[in-house]
Length: 97
Figure (cartoon, rainbow, N blue to C red):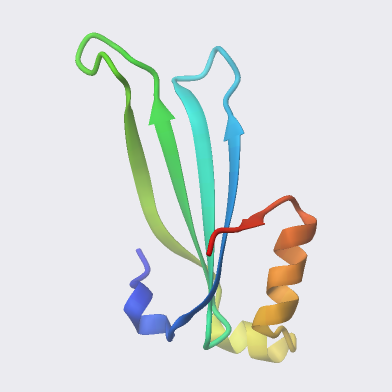
């Protein structure tokens, strides 16, 4: 798991939500992307599980932050935080803050 404070400050946070198909155990998925000042990209998947006998209202679960793009890889590919933000916006993500 990645630690947010180890990768500079957050430049952009983007979110994409979708509903799950009926046979799944989840009702909703939310993918959060954090583009950091050092060029790294961290993602987090949150899912809402359907209600069951133990949790009659359902519950949210987070799978934690994962590093998707490292600092050296972003620098080698000449990817600025603004270019990364624009690429995620083209794929349906919305700016969270």
